[in-house]
Image (tube, helix red, strand yellow):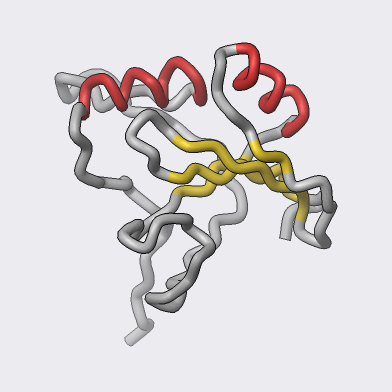
Length: 126
């Protein structure tokens, strides 16, 4: 029998102090559609591409706060344009000036101080 494997990430679920407000922030600034209220409306659709699944050591400082257990990374087509768009909206963006073999990165925080990494993959994406 062929071993089965998952085909992708079907959702990201996390606790929030104000779920509706946070969902709206992600929609307004990153284009992630909130969960529909019915089964006829399609949820947010992402483009196919590389997805990294990487557990980190419990004592990593990569996510920021010690209590932070997760961080999401979104792929973007034009990191510079996205950074300008976010800064114009009053969002602090920390752009990593280095270009890595797998692409370029920037970091923002959502209104509940969750770290969000933005990634412009190198061409072709690995």
